[in-house]
Image 1 (cartoon, rainbow, N blue to C red):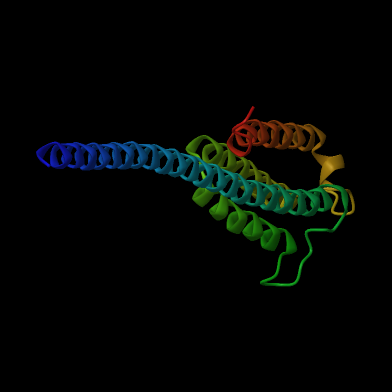
Image 2: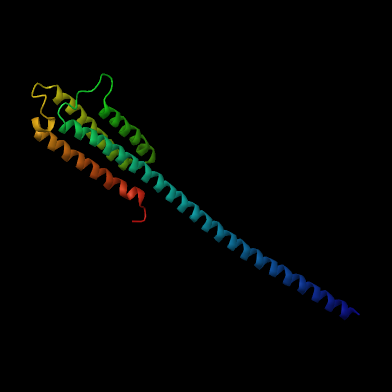
Length: 182
């Protein structure tokens, strides 16, 4: 009978040891799987956040460039149309377009990064400078029936060149910010 008890005890202990070993292996395997799934979830979350950030930046940059184009059209009109400076008191469509650029630039500031914000600031400064120069040139004595472009051709061409350079610099700075993949 002692042999039977010994065999039963050994059998039960080996069954318990096998169960414990199986449970330990299963727990380790489950922990590794959960850690892997957590890593994948974090990577996917980071990818989604990066994609969303790129989309927000792209929207801010496109809105800024659109506002700049509207302001450029208004500035162009002031350069080429005689008498385009004659506006009712307290209203200037070009100034309103410039304000829209400022509002769009605020979104660029929020979207970042700093390099793009600096390039945007340069665009805003060039627009403001051109607008101020147009107002100053329009106040100079001269043929009011002639367009500013015709009266001040070099300044008009220089303004167009500055616009182009600043806009290209902005796009060059913005492109890597919205496409982190290359």
